[in-house]
Length: 243
Image (cartoon, rainbow, N blue to C red; front, side, top):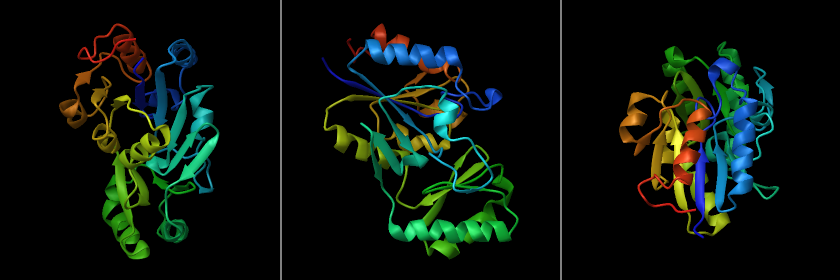
């Protein structure tokens, strides 16, 4: 039986902003049940969110927000940390681990609230400060860093890191020929979409994401993922999948 790899974004795709980005319990149960009952489905959460908060603005970890979700594995911090089979793989350079400490210090000096993860910095609601952010990141990292945007929120990460690269690493680890389905909502999901066979946008996705999607589901965060599972189960995704 052919394996199907479902790669889901977290914020505004699995979890609703109106719920504080905590996945609803009924959604968690239905996803967990689906994964358990369909052994050829591999379900990975692909998110910019951090595993733990090192310094700065306190944010709940993705595991706290996941509310008991048990995916096959995780791609965290926008592709730089892969967790599968209780093993972890960190994909950034030692130089970058030093850079983000220095960038964090400069952000603090300039009064920019942020949260420091293991390999990434989050600066929420900073679109209006993007010129200053670009200047700090470029100067401190000597070109090694970049900024990706998730609506108005900035993610500062190593230049060669993306959700797409995280998926590439995952495929090496899985060593399988899977049908890849990605579901997302925002700009930082474009590299995810570039590395899948079928692109799915939730109903609340940005217009540019809907434009490049193969399928736009009728539902928003969480329920859109369940709708995707129903499409897979009923073999309605372009006739490519059979369970």
